[in-house]
Length: 114
Image 1 (cartoon, rainbow, N blue to C red):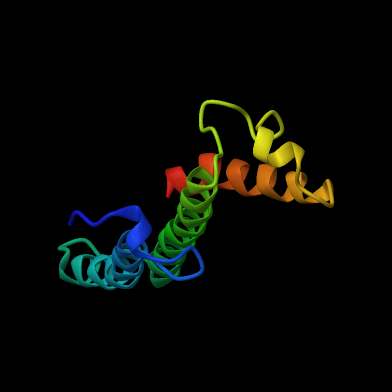
Image 2 (image 1 turned 120 degrees about the horizontal axis):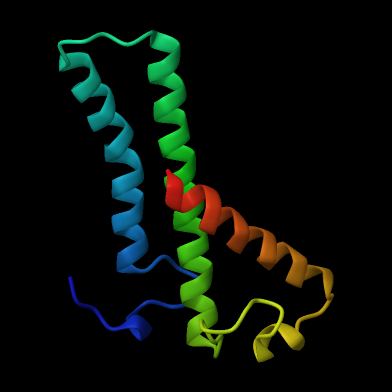
């Protein structure tokens, strides 16, 4: 699917985010169906915890990707750290920079592992 980034306003989901939504809905359902058809049965608690972990990780990744896309469109430089980015230096209040760092940390560690 190839659509220009500026086709969608920044305050609305883009085509990529709609595909992420679809992925977040379909993946847990497909995982449950695959586990259900498996010859080995897993404890229900393990199945539920696994599906919850995957759903949470993909949701966190979706949020971070959506925010990063919008930041890139306004001049965020991906090769710099959050705190060193010129866009973030102008951000007020400065505590918001910590929130963005936390979001990126969660995405890098938890979001990509799930």
